[in-house]
Image (cartoon, rainbow, N blue to C red):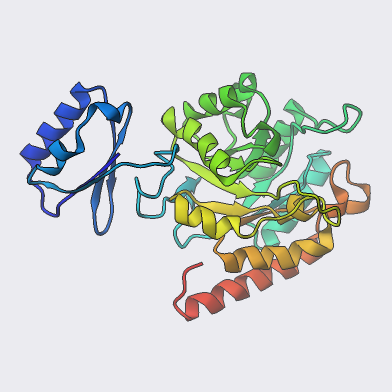
Length: 339
């Protein structure tokens, strides 16, 4: 349920309303927008008669929310949310380019790629230390050593870092990581999500391989319900009957999500297609569709990469793509549009 307050509402009446709601064991999510002040009511709202609230002088409107996700719902929070990653904003009119290797393979590799993507225009460095793989015989990542190397790349370049967590028990290892990624396979690992909800760090939440948009939003709700509202959603492609690409990149998910939630939305065209030559056109399409950023895999030697080489861009191709993305954004902003 949401309660929309009138402009210039009486503070004493407002405090009385808040106290009455809390007495009924209702949690209140306060959202101050440009046009409206909204109270989002979370809990068993069946105990509340909307007509009693509607009758108050300070109340403009009362609505019940039918969707199962509440805090992630745009009806709760009309303005776009912005997530801060070490001073870099994602959301609103803020677009971030996140790039790096699928897996951290060695110190030389991650440091070299970090410098190259930074020079090309990346603002956040990605890299996998823990790697969930379909086969138990594939490279599983350098784990703790990979995190150490990622932090060294952060120290040398100044780029904030994002890397994937696989288990709630690993959370202490991520103390100095700037943004924690939840991969597609863990999107419905609810105990992990609840743990991340109690951590004061931004979370990059990827859509599962065969999950609906509503299920993605419900996973975000798990994190938000524990207190952490700094969530960036990531569309990374879903499994369909099509075999020409690794996954089917759902570009339409961007405007759909934008209409349903206030949370920022980025796109991963690398996993979404599985082919390096498809990444640039899909990255540009995602930008035009309104994404708040891109997550792109870059490797200095894709042919010998230990993980996902076929979908990784070379630094040279990434640099060219970064220029084209900036051209698209610049053209749109000159026209006054919002991407």
